[in-house]
Length: 267
Ligand code: PTJ
Image (cartoon, rainbow, N blue to C red):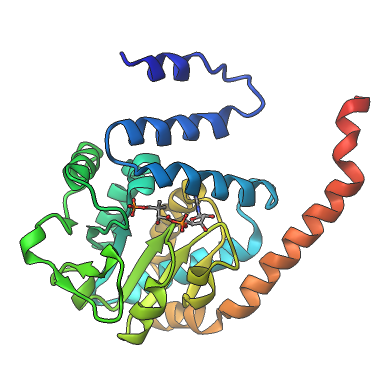
């Protein structure tokens, strides 16, 4: 047992921040195993900060976005889920389940390449039961023009031929480029005003640890819908309004905290 696992076991379930600490440790363990890049720790911290001011729950606009995302993935001819180090460390089982239910391959696509990282992520995903994993054969990859980062390298059997791509916890400018080459992009990002969030067709402003279980549940439900019903969900969804609703929620949450936060010291 590694030292960190010992620390992890020491977190008491009664700790008021147990859930948050549990996922922190998954990220730390992931970094030690090469799954997560060093910058992944910082990205996780930024996510935690936004999660805090969203009340650490899946809010209604996020649920609406998840519904539209699932309908789009079911209607897609070639849906793909992009996988980076953070999500492989946080939710590998859920990724495997959703990939299977939606017949959407998991394509490993990393911003920070490093010797051994792809292999480490493949191992984690396979251990979690994932079968259709792409992005692991370096020689096969092709490059998207107009993108400078390592994310330009995509799999011809995955993102290249896909029509709908889900990009959880994404950095920078890839979403913009993916849209320019005709892809529909679903982002999962706790920051509602990141470039990715703004450019995406469907932006789920929620923590990936809550989003994926809900996507699995909704896939079970929406798979029983016919095409007209699914198209109605997709067409009625307004991403810009949804992001604005999320920003209103943050404003309201902060205003409520201004009034209520000090109550705990009087309990
Ligand atoms: O594994 P790699 O090499 O592909 O790198 C992955 C990271 C995440 C390090 C890379 O993509 C990166 O640097 O991302 P950014 O620019 O930090 O953006 C990540 C976004 O995800 C930020 O807007 C965070 O708020 C958000 N985020 C972090 N944790 C979560 C999250 N959104 C949803 N759920 C989370 N758990």
